Image (cartoon, rainbow, N blue to C red; front, side, top):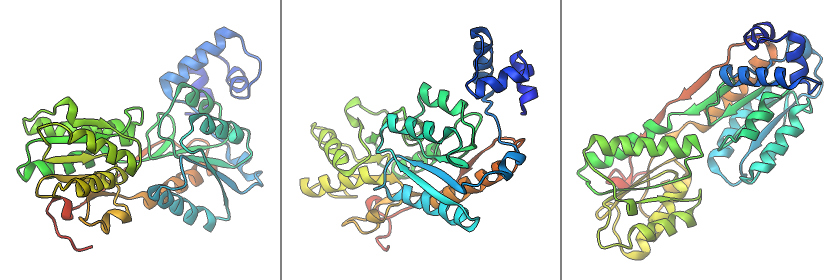
Length: 332
């Protein structure tokens, strides 16, 4: 959608749209019309090929939630592989899962300090949406879906469904889940939905005390496992939203004398290296994180070359890798 088409939908002039996205003066009525149209269409102004030809920074901003994540490092590897081959350097910003730092980073990049931005966000607040709508450089979203932007994401719900179903198909009937915040639509809500879909299809229910919300780390997984196993009735399988959480569950089970997979099966998402060498190797869904980065970088390059590119969402597939924690082969 170009600016003329958007202006027609909003019911304002092209110059009014231009002033809005360049922080110029605009009446409250016109501003309200434009913001309503943005909400309905997801419109974000493209950067013209003519403008692109004048860029000299050869920098791309990459905003990540943390440095210590193996999955994020794989995404960044993919981004770097593509962009460095095209003569770009990466300006990497680590927000340490701080939403305010994420917003500040977008504000920093908003006025063309870089040629484009690749954003690895876990949640999108109203402030995110406000800042993103005013970006003056192309933005690609990696790991999540956001209307009006080019996005590369994963089939999180189906991965969670497949892992849960795998354990239930092996005869387990008391499933538990350790997920993450629903505000994270990918690792959070989508994976919760996949777990519950498999449980519902099996005709089972999940007691409230068999559900826990963890942080994205092993210590939190350990703590939540202790909660789940504290009652008289124990689960016989646990789906974990991430491998790091599952590693904490494995550690708790080992210390508590709970046998994996005999007493409880465990499965999770990510295929981190640690799960391949654990005392009981971890069944997991391999998500193609490096491929995510490669495709995000390619999308950004295409957007830099064309202001009229139709935005799209690319959803990557996954692979279930069965290992010892669900009774599969222990071979790494």
